[in-house]
Length: 454
View (cartoon, rainbow, N blue to C red):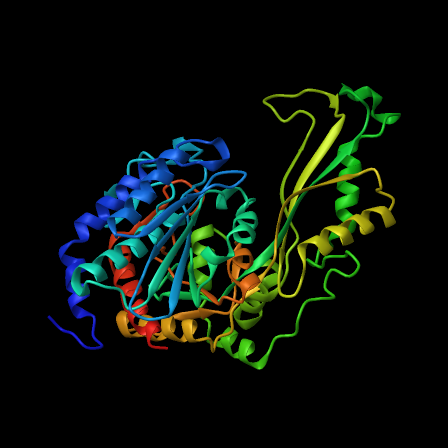
C-alpha cells in the first residue's frame, strides 16, 4: 500500500469495490423520489440516512416546513471542515414513452446507467458517500471533518432550505462546500464551476370576463391572451434586451481575471449545435462573445404560456384568462426581490396594472473567487487525476440555492461531478457513464486529502 501524500491505495480499494458503490447508486435510483408529486420522498430520505450510518456518521433527519433535510457529520483528524450539498429529490419522469429504459430501475447499458436522477443528483451524492467510505476503509480516519447536507426540495425551488440554514447555522458551518452538480465537455474534459446564477421565477396572470365565451364576442370583449402578449412585448425586444427600467443597473463589469477565464473556457459549440439539431446560436453568437453571454448575462425566458383551448381539433372560444411563466436568470449583484419589484413598476407604467404577478421562486446568485483554496485544490487534483486541465467556469448558467447554504455564511463553494455532455438532466434517458462515476469517487477522495492541507 502506498502511503504519504499519495492516494493510489484508496484508488485501488475503490476499483476493487466499485460493484458495491454501483449497487448503492442503483438502489437509490430505484426510489422514485419526486418532490413535486410527493412520491417516494420518505423512503429516499431514510435510504440516504442508511448510507450515512454505513460510513459511521452522526446523522439527523432535520424537519422543515416541507420535506426534511438530511444532515450527516464524520469527524476527521484536522480542524478543517468540508461540506457536501446534494439533494435526494428528482424531476418527474414524464414523458415515460420517450424513455428507452424504465426510469426507476438503474439499467446499465453500453457503459452508462440510465435512471431519473442518476445525474441530477444521486450519482454525485453516492460518489461522495463512497469516497468517504473508501477513505475510511483504507486509512481508518478522514483527513478532515466532512458534513453532508442533503435536501429534498431542490427540484421544486429549495423553498425551505433558507429556513433550514437560518434555524441551524451550526450544521451549515464549514470551511468550504462542494456543490451538487458537475459535468464533462463533449471531449470528456471535466468542468469545474465556481458559482450559479440567481433566479426570479414568476407567473403573470391576465384576467378578462368571468367565463370563457363564444369567440364571436371578440369584437366587443377584450381577450386576455392578446393583452398578455402585448404586455410581454414591452418586457423584451427582438434583440434579447430586457426593457424593464433598472434591470441591468446592478450587473457588474467583468474583471480581467473573469475575461481571461472566458478565453480559456472550453465550450463545445459544434457538438452542442449538432446535439440540438440547430445551425447557429441566438444572435449568431460564437467564440468568446457566446461564452461571455452564457456565463455572465442575465436572461428573461418564457417557460410556458396557457390560455383558452389547446386540445385536439378546433373550439372557437374567447378565453377568460391567460397565464405565462417567466424565469429571469440573474448574475451578481442582481437581487431577485428587486427584479420582481422592477417588473411590477414596469407593468404599471405601461398600463398593465391589472396583470397579477405570482412569485414562484426567488434565489440569489452566488460566486466563489478563482483563487480560493477550495477552487485551487479541486482544479489541481482534477488535472492530476484526469491528466487534463479542467474547464473552469467562473459561474454556471444554471441556478441553485448556493447562496442559502454557502455565501450567506461566507462559505466558498465549488461544483464538480459525474455527469456528462449528454446526461439528459430533466429529460428522458437521463444517464451517467459508469467510468465517470468511479473516477468521481476517486476525485473526491483525493480532494479531501489535498484540501485538508490547504
